[in-house]
Image (cartoon, rainbow, N blue to C red; front, side):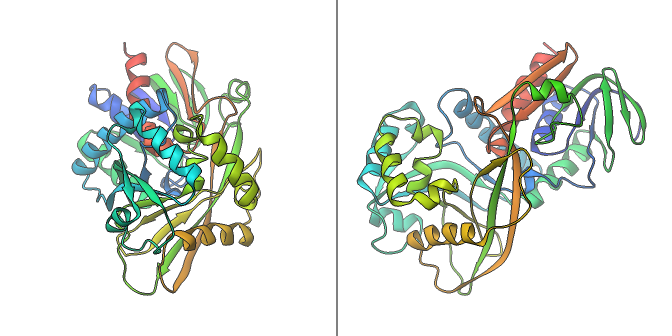
Length: 375
C-alpha cells in the first residue's frame, strides 16, 4: 500500500470491483482496491468470459449490458486482452423455439440480430451437427475473453496506467466511512464501495440480509476435442431460450418452457442451459447448471455434467474429446432483482450483481455508482 488515504476504497477485486475502479479513475480519483485473496478467485474467473448482450432481461439489464459491451471493447484494446471470438449463434430445433426467436427479433433487443437457416448457421459454426437444428438466431454483439487471464490483465492495467493501488491478501474487518479497518491496518477513504460477490456475512450483514439473497452453484467443464476444430461463435441452444429472461419473459416462450418441462425435465430441474465458447488453445468451455442454497455443497455431480454434455453432443459434432477440467462457481442470487445497490450512508455503497451476468454488466454499473457518488 503506497499511502493510507484515498478518494475511494473498493472492497473486492472481481469484475464488479474493477469496473468501479475504472469509472472512478477516469474521473481522476485516487483509488485503492482491497481483496482478501492474492488474485481474483471468485465468480469473475469461473465463468465463460462470455460478454453477453443478447438475451439479457429487457430494460435495465439489457441496457447495462449494451453499455458494458462498449466499455469491454475499449478495455480489451487498451489492456491487450485478446477477444477470442465474437458473436452468438442461438440454435433452435423445436417449432416453439422458432416462435420465440421470431418474437425476439420484433423487439428493440433484436435490432442487430437476424434469423439464420440451418445451412447459414453451419457457416457460422462449422461443427454444428448436421440435421440437429431447424434455424438459429445470430447476434454479432457478443465477445469472449479468457476470464482467468483477463481479470489479472485488467488489474495490472489499472495499476500501471490509471495509478490504482491494490492491497491483496487483505481482509476488511469493518467499514465506517471514512475509516476501514483491515488485517493490514487502518485505511482512510472519503468514499467506499463494497463489492462482496456472494459473501453476505462479512460486511454490512444486516443490510445485505434484508434483500433475501441466496447463492447459486453452477457446474462447468473444459472439453478438449482430439482433432483441431474452430467453433466460430459462442453457441447456445433451445434451453437458453427458456432461461435467459430476454427471451423467456416473452409470451411466446410459455409454450417452449412447457414442452421442455415435459421432454427435458432433467435439464430443467437442474437449471441447465447450454453455452459453449472456445479458448485460444482450441479447448471449449461448456456449461452450465444452476442450484440454489445458502451454503451450496462443494461437490460436482457427474450426472449433471452428463446432462450438459448430452445437450452439447446433440448440437455439436466434435468427434472424440476429453474432459480436462471440471469446476464449480457460485454467485449471489435474489428472487426479485438482478442487481442491488445499497446506501448505508452518503459516502458508502454496497453493490452486488444478483444473477449470472456480472461480467456482462459490471462496467455500466460502475459508471452509474461512481456518477451517483460524485454527482
